[in-house]
Length: 120
Image (cartoon, rainbow, N blue to C red; front, side, top):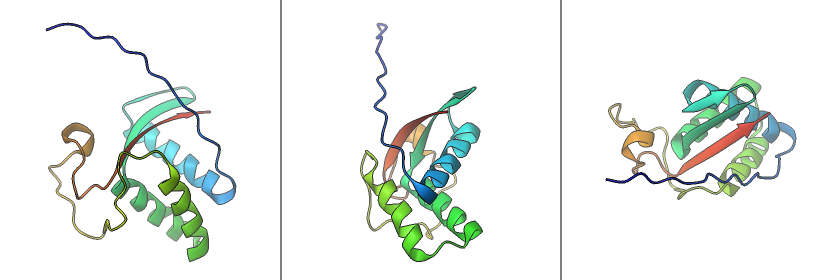
């Protein structure tokens, strides 16, 4: 067995605007809790499509967002460089509690997967 060394490159995306920017902060806060690396003004986290759609539902409900505004946030989410995106993912279907998409790899219950870096 050998030791492989790699370089991580970050491609910063355009900042979203308006309420979508507020939602991006919500994702950054979630990454501070559930991410795998964080520190002062930085965090890294993997997200499944199921996870971000659940975050969006909670965010929209707390803020009583109209469907059109929620659709704008969803459009931004879909525009991110996902490793797959399932347009037919039903987040109301119960999730297997023993499955961890970050450790086991995503499956049909998770939808797509993305890793993001947040820096502030």
